[in-house]
Length: 264
Ligand code: NAP
Image 1 (tube, rainbow, N blue to C red):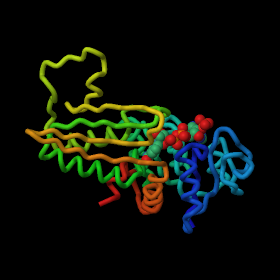
Image 2: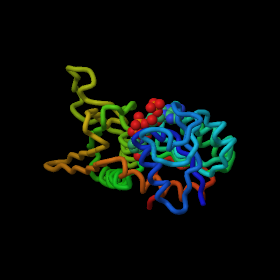
Image 3: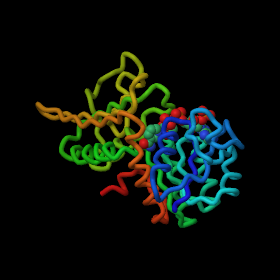
Image 4: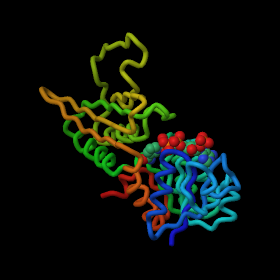
């Protein structure tokens, strides 16, 4: 039985992760880390699943008192990084969906995982369809190098562009020469009109209530366009990916950044 701790169990993603762990026969939920209900059981908190699972505010105390194999972190980048560092200290394997980590954060965390020979997964997007969208986009960029990304998310999202958009841009730039798109003399009449720039391609972030997580990658060529689009309709769409990451992280001895590296 794989023992799991979830950080952020009151959040939209965290709630789904609690349900996924409970519904998986080979997983057991050992504890949750929540900064508001420390000392209670989940069943005592309105809005949480009616479970006899203890709630901790202090993640170190949680690891000391709860033997666990995996930490699923679905909080904020600032806390997610500290949670990962603490997990490494206690030999717990992190599976992290929290987005907004910098390249430096990932490098630092990778070095620690390597030194400790401990598996870890950070996945900016756990939706398997979104991983396929990224892979297909990389494939298309070899032949259609002019491309822009439009990502759309709910208006409570803290970081922009999304981790998925940044990752897609990175995958595309791996297969095409950096190129400046648009007119060489174009100007912005309003700041930000052309979006964020990554190796010459543009990323546009839309934030609106009612949205969940959506991305369209638009390729343009002579007389043709190609659009590759993925939509996550709800947070449950991410859970098969979280489960896959939990199963996989147990077999790893290093940090993997991006679910695309564990989906062939
Ligand atoms: P959310 O609904 O705002 O939930 C975040 C939760 O984390 C909140 O309940 C918050 O509690 C809690 N939290 C923050 N700091 C904490 C700490 N130190 N200890 C314990 N809990 C803490 O956000 P969400 O939509 O669930 O998303 C969570 C993260 O996952 C974000 O980074 C988001 O971008 C990312 N995400 C990833 C994927 C993916 O596929 N990888 C998909 C969707 C979202 P409070 O109420 O006390 O603030």
